[in-house]
Amino acid sequence: MFSDCNDCHQESSYYLGASPHDSTLEGCVMCHTPPVDGFGSHLLDPSGSMPDINLSSALCGDCHVVVFDEWDEFEDPDFDMESMVSHSEPTEIAEPDVLHSDVSCVVCKSTDGAILNLEEPETYMLNEEDVHDIEVTEWAIACVACHDPHEAALRVEDSSLLCSNCHNTEGIVADGNTSAVRHAQWEMISTSGYFDGTHPIVIGCVDCHMAIIPSDGEMTTGHDFDFNAVALSDTDSVNGCYSCHLGSLPSSVELKQEKVSIRLSELNSLKEEANAALETINGTDEYGI
Image (cartoon, rainbow, N blue to C red; front, side, top):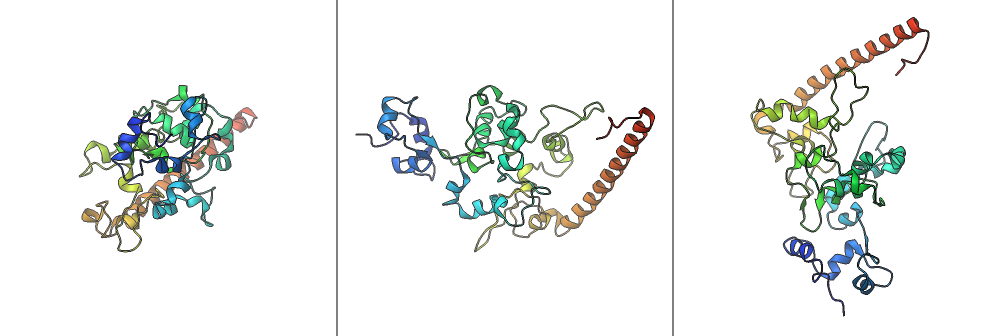
């Protein structure tokens, strides 16, 4: 009589036993739905009768309520897909073209792809070969994309390295000849003063994008991944910004953002003027962007 999964899945059971998650059969079936004929058919034909795996964040949210509510921005009535982005956005709704694109998009626009991609933690090492063969079941970036549920730990110990696996340009640089550079967050931070020692301490992605504020009631965990200068400046925030910046961080950020906005506006105006000039010279609108 089949009683648990430990006899075969010894490594997963080992990690589960050291984590807060339930390592018994009852715990396994929370995420692994038995085949139609039960786990007995899986024992007889392990590859041909596989349990379905639930990768949904809603499953995690049954216990991790606060974290799920922060992550699930897409369901907020005020969420605007035109001006906002979120890991909770279903790709098939927000970017349906990705469903028919190459595998480099699938590895970062789905949880199924992200799990495979993070098996090789180094930046620019997209696991495109294995992704060719997967059937995507979760088109949002769910909890288990970053967190291994068996170990109850991050899939990549260095959180900035974890983020960099998707938030990078795939090695493309702004050299004056490249028409588009996307997802350049890793290139920006890894070559910035936050990494090279200019800033008093090295800070990574989560230091700014996950404001954590303990509370006697409902704590803030930062799983919306929004940059929130006010929250980071909270005297109770564990991120540590207040110890140096005190209450000046929000105004400092606003000043820097204003300069960036002005520069972007100037560049857009210059681009429009260049396009208009080229169209006048060539009698064509092929240069319009």
